[in-house]
Amino acid sequence: MNSTTRPLAIVTGASSGIGYELAKCCADYGFDLLVAADEPAINDAAQDFRTLGAAVETIEADLATLDGVDKLYAATHGRPVDALLANAGHGLGHSFLDQDFNAVRHVIDTNITGTLSLIQKVGRDMRTRGQGRILITGSVAGFMPGTFQAVYNGTKAFLNSFSWALRNELQDTGVTVTCLMPGATETEFFERADMLDTKVGQAEKDDPADVAKTGFDAMMGGEGDVVYGWRNKLQTTIANVTPASMLAEQHRKKAEPGSGEQ
Ligand SMILES: NC(=O)c1ccc[n+]([C@@H]2O[C@H](COP(=O)([O-])OP(=O)(O)OC[C@H]3O[C@@H](n4cnc5c(N)ncnc54)[C@H](OP(=O)(O)O)[C@@H]3O)[C@@H](O)[C@H]2O)c1
Image (cartoon, rainbow, N blue to C red; front, side, top):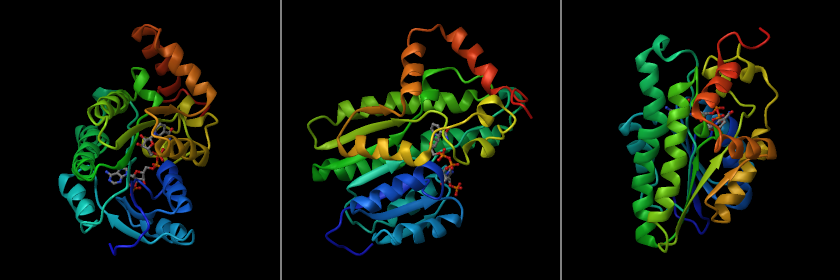
């Protein structure tokens, strides 16, 4: 990307949902953008970001693959990255034994492997420069065993934990790490995870713009983590003192296929 005096943010998963809104927050603030997603819709989203004054480059890449991550990283062309918003991710409903293993692996490779690979590359540059902000989209799902969404919840537990550890490793380096932990949010997430017939899939959800603004502000403020919304805050507080067996049973009630009103 051409060098300018504006800071640069990378936002993954910026074609829809929370990532789209995070990219808008960045553009509003004055960042130029390098945005990535797996489908051509990222180019339409980029037009919206440009209307907010940002110079925007788009990359179509499967961030579940190391090649995809390399392609995204290469698109910086050495321009310093001031903020990395590692947000791309997806879920997968149904019982684990009934899931296609390639789909299982794609969840893990997107949410964990690709995310970590990108954070390591960009994070090393940030540490060398002595400045940078990293936002990781974890989830309140990481606080509870995800019956009928078991692999996804596991990946988010990983990210919630990883984020705090990386933050501590980077203390005093000038690089901050923040974990955004949304609750159920009105995006394409549940459709993609084939969970539209579930209670959680059909429930009223948070507005992705509000969720993203909370995460963006926390990142800019250098906070360690942020749970969006008082209901979700209450849920995570209770989850911390509730036996895992009970949490797994509660998750069954809202994520079991057919648990919605149809
Ligand atoms: N919605 C919720 O209830 C909720 C709650 C907590 C946390 N989250 C997390 O929030 C993040 C954003 O999800 P969302 O709710 O905004 O859902 P979304 O509307 O489905 O957006 C997901 C974004 O990630 C991209 N993406 C997914 N897999 C990718 C891959 N392998 N390579 C490149 N891009 C990929 C998608 O791009 P393509 O369409 O091009 O694949 C899309 O831009 C995820 O990490 C999710 O786990 C969501």
